[in-house]
Image 1 (tube, one colour):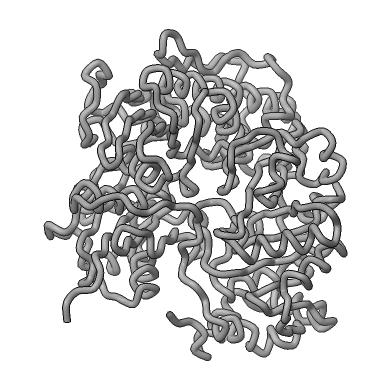
Image 2 (cartoon, rainbow, N blue to C red; image 1 turned 180 degrees about the horizontal axis):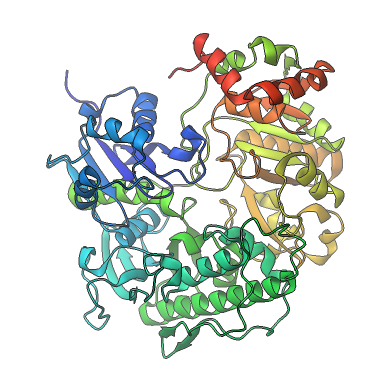
Length: 607
């Protein structure tokens, strides 16, 4: 039988946010991050789980894949895998996965169908190749990319660096499938004992992660740092970034910055350094915004481009994105929803499709719902376990959006599980916790019952796209919750639970064409309350990935203060027995394991 489709598989491998993206005839069929499967935040290691997920969802084997393109920002994948054979690097290949890797056909593959590309090149393809623009420019800024010696694309000879310098910023022009590098900004290796830790390097994203480590004890808390910044006082800390004539300089730190958060040193919230941390968060955010805005203006002025695409970890900074959208002068801006390293899988796949297979662009990523769908039978199986069943009441609704809107208006916190999962770090309405924004207290309710995160962190709104400009300032669209907008003054008292201390909100606009269920829910809530806005935060608890499966959703529901769970058109509530059984399960067993193992025995998971 003749082959029906052309498949390209893209992979982000070994370090944080391992992921896969499967293209079917140039369109994204499925994409997933490893953390959603293993339940380990920012999961690293081998890539078998993400490959299996995509292939099983499509109903094919690896033999059907025409091309595999991968990236590891540490080293080119073939060299990385050669080292893993003879070197123990548990952070990149834990012991439990070593044997799995050696048996896998892609590990150390010599097939011509298996290709490795460099990091910023993959980020760039993830941005422009699935954007709605025929031509424009691309901005890629992240913590650290590949060594200069491993970079594949030609770049201006004036952007010189040593072979061991690392990518920090890359700027490109594209016209249909053609991509040209306009500028590279490198980070030279840092001196000292911690020289291998990128956040000591002199780069834009590296510095932001350095401050994240300084304030939170974790380089990967950049989102929290952005949320803390508005609490800081202006100009209390000297500049951490300087730029003269387009050249970026990261000054050495002064002895003023000698109050790092030390893990296990007591309560973070009660630390006497809090005022200093707020001030330095303001400074690094302000410096970052100003540098990015200057870079974006340079791109527009030197190229005359009307369209800008952004990718790389810094593209998750929605406050900076908002300023670029409003002040850089571009007519249109598009930000990859999986802008961080999980989105590298998309870029690898499209490099293969466009550059290696020489195919044309025909797909626009107008939504991020590219996980596998779960059948109603799988939802039923997740609710069938005896220890689950005695704690819940579940019934199918003939109008789940109307019934959910009524519960929301009654101040209930809802776990909302619909369709395929979102790809990227944001819950965009298929794996979300949803609540009423009309009471400021709802923010504290969500934190105390479910999220258990720092009180300063804001919650984001979802809004009907056609009402967005009425409620939030700015004309730019924000379908992926990646642009912060000021809330119009006349609406701040109406939706106080989503208004940050600086009067802004990280907006997601919702259209019927891309998420009809979420759109209907907003319409039903608007009909009841006159407010076309809801709180939308990720369906998880602090420290865990967003839920992927119905079993994950049930486990989170039973172990938190979520009031109701909506699985497709099934509405779930807790019975009085929940208060009896839940403490026993928490004490004597792992809820997620109990639910998943029993569901598996009942044949709950399938394609």
